[in-house]
Amino acid sequence: MNFQKVVAVIVGSFLLGFGINGFLVPHHLIDGGVIGIALILHYFFGFQTGLSMLVLSVPIFFYAWCYERPFFYSSVHGLLLTSLFMDWLNPLKKVFSLSILTSSLIGGVIIGMGIGLMLRYETSSGGTDMLAKIISKSSSLDIALAIILIDTLIISAAVFTLGVEIFLFSCVTIVIIGLTTSLLKVRH
Image (cartoon, rainbow, N blue to C red):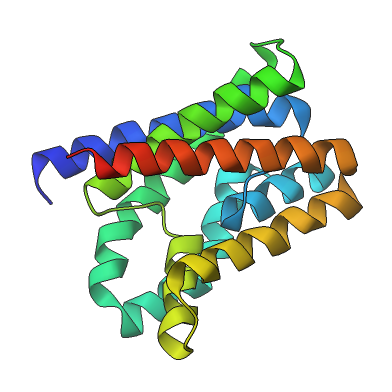
C-alpha cells in the first residue's frame, strides 16, 4: 500500500467516524449499508457502532477473502480503521447541538468526504461496496443498482424503527453523502 493510499484510509476513516458520531448519532439518523445496520443496533441495544460494523462485515469479508482477494486487501484496512474511529470518536455525540437538518447536511458532507477520499485511492471501508460487488457478480444486477437496493432496504427499516422524520432526514443525509462522494471521487 503506497503512502497516499495509507493517508486516504486514515483520513477517510477518521472523517467517517467524526461525521457519524458528531452529526448522525445525536439525532438517531442512519446511513445505508453495514454502517446503517450498526447504527440501528447502537440506537436500540447500545452496541458499539464500530464493533457492530466489524462483526457484521465478517461474512462479507470472508467471502471476499475466498473469491475477491484484491478487493479484500484494498478494503480490510478501511474497515478496521473506520470501526476503530467510530468507537473512539463516540464521545462526539455530545459535543454539537445543531438542528436535525443542519446535522444531516454537515454529517452527509463529512461522511461523503471520507468515502470519496477512500474511493479516490481505490480503497473503502468495505460493507455495502463489497456486498454489492458480490451480488452484482453472482447476478446480472448492476453494482450501482445493488448499492441503491441495499441502502433502500436498510433505510426503509428506519421508517418502522425510528419514525418518518428520522427516515426523511436520513434520506437527506444519504443524498448528500452520495453527491459529496461523487464530487470527491471524480476529481483526480
